[in-house]
Image (tube, rainbow, N blue to C red; front, side, top):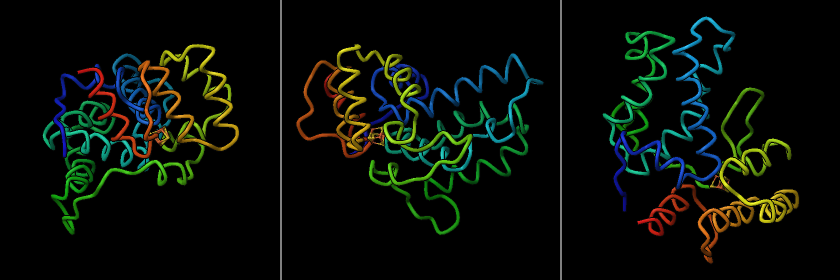
Length: 203
Ligand code: SF4
């Protein structure tokens, strides 16, 4: 059962209810939006600016699963990509991929958002932002990212410990519990489950 998410709520929901993997992708897109406004000629790599395919799929399908309508999704991605590539190229090259995710192009497959298992098993390369931070971040980056999410230093050591022993979903569950101050007995199996559980609590 899909909820609904509108473009105007997306920043707020990202801060309170996105799991770390999506928060990271979302912040990357947003940072790039800001950078591209102020530093158009700075040394952003082409790759970074476009966020590679894996990240676009992982975040795009998550947002779709969260109930972001196709028109809002097009507006969201267009705000970032057209800065660099121009509106015309966006419409030609990127809009297709987004409509494709929504089953409106090609074979019209209605793609489903990625599960934790699929994300954990993905293999992001240098400069990629997709994947599961509990598996793919260095300890230093993971600590910084968790601090930014508001995980207290006591809970933080437990989370790092689970990540180190390769219990990535458990690490995510502990993060959820620390951030929400509420238990999550079922554990985290899917980023969209993290989101919907969080929204139920915060409602
Ligand atoms: Fe995302 Fe799942 Fe990893 Fe949590 S465990 S960060 S929801 S992939």
